[in-house]
Every structure is written in structure tokens, then in C-alpha cells.
Amino acid sequence: MAPGNSPSVEIGVNMTDLNKVTLIGRLTKDIDVGYTQNGAAIGKFSLAVNRSRNGANGKVDEVSYFNCKIFGKLAETMKPYLLKGKQIGITGYLKQERWEKDGQSQSMVTVGVEEIELLGKKETESNGYGGYDAYGYGE
Image (tube, helix red, strand yellow):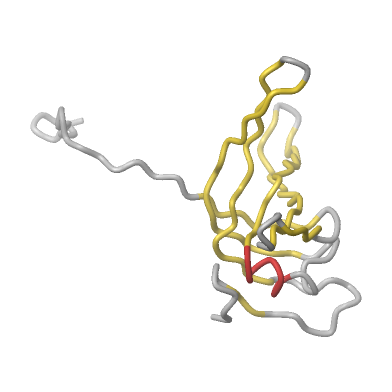
């Protein structure tokens, strides 16, 4: 950098934390919707997200799988549309779930879905585009 063009750094500035994730991928199976003891809907699904990168021997394709949860009216509204192979876009937050099994601490990071967008057609679909927010309303 040229003299006088160095980046500025402020020490002690209060910053707000950020927990936001956006993914586009395909469902690995149909959504599983269940209900809590209080009757609230919880939908669970896994999203496969592909990524290409340059490796030592050329292009390398990688796939990552993300466990996702949607809640309430959004889970119920989206159930007929979230089918295996469907491409969707989601926006939400990361949540670390913790529990004990056989005396051992366990944990898993899931994606809490706040917004969902139906994208590409599944081969057997004739339509199905649209977006829904956390309240189940179309965008």
C-alpha cells in the first residue's frame, strides 16, 4: 500500500454479532413435518449444496449436506412443495444443538430457516415457483 493509504482499525468499537446464512441447493428427501407437545409444527429436511473449486488435477466438485428446520405455519405451508430433488434457496441462521448421549456430550449445527424460495423445477413438476417468509406469506 502507498503511504497514507493504510486501512484504519478502531480498537474498542462495539460491533453487533451476525448469524446469517444463505444457501441454494436440492432436498435430499421429502420434508418431515412433526409437531411439538404444544402443537407447533417443526419441519426437518436436508439440503445438498454443490460447490466447484480448482484442485491440483483440475476442477473438483464437492457436496455438503445441511440439516435444516422450519417452524410454525411456514413448515405446514411448504410441506407439499418440499420434495426430494427440489431446488430451493433458504435464508436463516446457524444454531448449535447440544445434548448428552450415554454420558457423552453431543452437538450438531443446524440451519434455522426464516425465508424459503422455491427455485428450479423438479423433473415431474409443472410449476411451483414462489417465495415464503417465516410467517407463511408469499413474497
